[in-house]
Length: 136
Image (tube, rainbow, N blue to C red; front, side, top):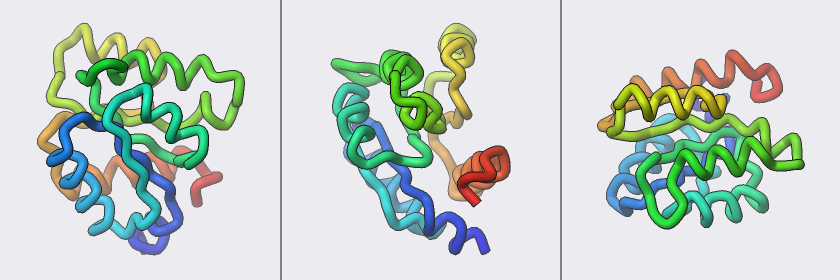
C-alpha cells in the first residue's frame, strides 16, 4: 500500500552533499517514490521547484550560497499558493534549539535528524500524506 501511495508523490531533495543526495534518493526509491528531483542548494532548489512542483521537499539546512532556512523563507513568501504551501521537511544533522525554533517560526512541516533511517523517512512520508488529504 505505501509503495502505491508513495509512487504517486513528486519529491525533491535539496542537499549540498552528493553522497547524501544519493542515499536519500535510494531510500525514497525503496519506499516506492519514482518522481524525484534534486538540487544542491536552496537557490537552485527553488528554481527547480517552480517547474517540478513537488508534493514534498526534503531539505538540508547548512548549504551555500542559499541555506535551508532561507530556502524555506523564500518558499513561504511565494505569491503562488501552491508553492508557498509545499510541504518542506528539514533533513539535517543540526538539532540545535535555535535552528529548530527558526524552522518552526517559518512553518517547517517536519524535522528529521541525520542520519535518517528508511523507517523514519517512511514514517514522515506517511505523516505528511495523512495530514494532507489531497496527497491521497
